Image (cartoon, rainbow, N blue to C red; front, side):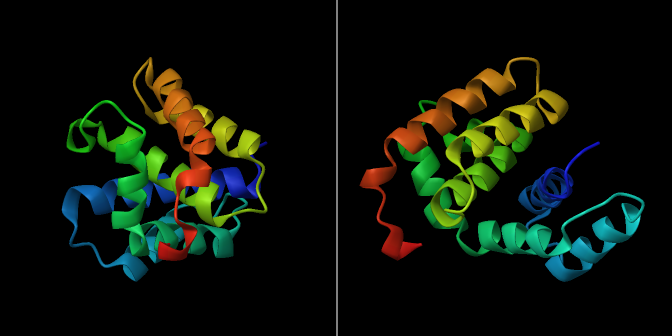
Length: 142
């Protein structure tokens, strides 16, 4: 059985994916819809809301962090990979209560479920670089 936070991350990826494509979705309504469609699952709704709004609120800063640690152009990333990297980067910088190993593992698992067949290796590599270079990130801007 999946943890409540794992389910929150999965649903957050879906919302972020939709937001990345449309940029016009009404966040509150989308969150409400996703929760309603998944009410049979155990879900940490507070965490879900915090990570979705946290990523979107800090999107430009998060994208700068990703861009510094990636060789591909950000706009050439698959939308799913981009959503996973954005979510995990937010957790690395903002959620100090979550061990890095957990964040990387969650990112890898999400990539295995939703990404292409080699996405998990790519996600692992980028998240590892972000963590390695974390001391160079200016937290005050976040």
